[in-house]
Length: 278
Image (cartoon, rainbow, N blue to C red; front, side, top):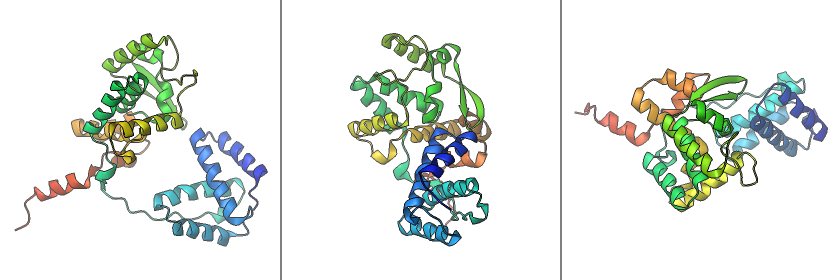
């Protein structure tokens, strides 16, 4: 089985025809290129793939990262007509609590917003608050338009599914005021200075710079962690995981459970309050 420029381009079309997201296509192509580099552009048989799987583990990749890379390989095998060579994923035992070192707190979130405001960066200030107060994915920021602010709801299309999210009235009012100030009368709210929509890379870099200025641990500050903060805050207030799954656009509640995990410190404190040690 060959892996070269011609076959990877055909693989790109294969993924696009199956309506995979742009981010997924980009990642799968990158991961397949890593496999090609490992095997010299030719996979002789399944033993080569098993050796590659072992190589990833020896390189120190986290099990979840290895599995995401194997997903790309398995997709390529389906494309190449070699489904019998599919690799088994590593078994990952799910923890029922999150690491405190990765959990963005509300106090840290407020510090990020206040730091952006103090720096006069209203775009970043509004962006951070929009993601955190709605729970949208970074790829869904494009759905926030002037028109959606006027109706109070945004239609989001992701992975072949369509959902409508309700935008808080206060957020709509603040963002419309921001748009008037910036001369944005229609279309997407969050744009680059050259007039292009902000993408994942733009937002990631902006937030990392903000983390440094706000003196918040870099590992806590990324767009998806704002989504996690929204989920934890919502669940703590309403204890409705089914409704939360709908809001976040999750097909499975199992995914939503990951977002609502308590920190290990909080869980330990709850267990100790049971007072069952005599």
